[in-house]
Length: 511
Image 1: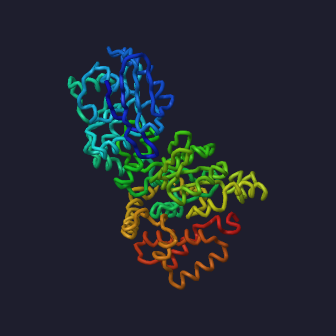
Image 2: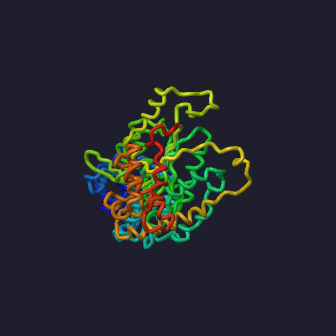
Image 3: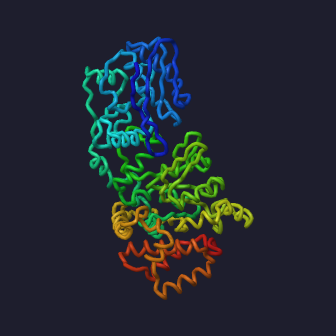
């Protein structure tokens, strides 16, 4: 008897429906075709044990299973449940008439219970698009899949629950989630708040500008100055994610298997990889490409602490995704693209010892050591960072002050107002939502300067020997400062403030 059941494969952040054809005939053997990987080939042992432990048998006949389209590589153990149901129906151990209306996915344990899978959200979105009635999957993944309205999503704990439902013996209720309620909860209670930070008013101003325009930022200062503390609080002042951004971000984390019984992500991600990270772990890849840290930080913040400690080739692979806001991973037979629109926040010490030019420090670094340390960061990468700011240690008077600083929620209101101005400006443009995403054409249009501002910028360009890319960065930052002031045009004071935030371009910036 021939039976068709349906599963799904995830490539990049999109899913493709897989038709699993199970044919049972005279003879003996188990033949699995359609480019399965080793995890799928090993499924026969898990299926046989799970069937025996639940009162069913593996048919002692010739079982041929084809996973179509046959030229598409299938990977992972998530097809166990699909194959099991197909074998049971094809061997007539169970009766299921509506089996073609459901996507069935799940990894089997030997006792028939189910283990979580990756990519439940993209699979549910594809199932809805293709008109399937429902989706069976492990209970641990049900919240992420239930975000998709118009699809019956059943979270099951073991294979017997699926069998009982298909035979109309059991009563499974589909999981429903109020997406909007899930989306708006806990927005006003950030884990890290700017009210905890004493002093550092100029740095907070920088962070506010970076958040308002989505600009990349680097913090330079000695150990203990508060660089990491400030960076961790940046997500708390970013505008709340839109529903579209939340779905994009949740999709990527779903594909990477990082959701852990969470529905829709409503907090912007904050990723802080260690400096020993490899190229592939940072940008994504592998023989079966997986999203890297830059994609996991999509719509959020990627924090690189101690930037010069990262291997130079690791930082260089980030240059192109910083410009394109997506990363394309190519293999001989296929190509996948992951979105990677993130805010880069980097921190570094001014010298190997961390106390360059500090008269109170016993540790000093020679000019040669300094040069070698700073040369780990390439000029083109620094050019892609809009704001450079020096962080100085907080004096005791500020640390011991009982005055409560401004909270993240208050700062976020100003940032959100500036972002709304930008949203209105770019509403007719598909891939541009805030100032940092502007290209040269938009900069010429929206950052027009009067004669005073032009002269000021010309003088700065000549004195600091700035590149053309740095020129564009200054204009973008100046446009953001103008938006925070709700000013229709960029004026000289906005340009002057933006020029201050190019510390690393200045000769003797550490002096």
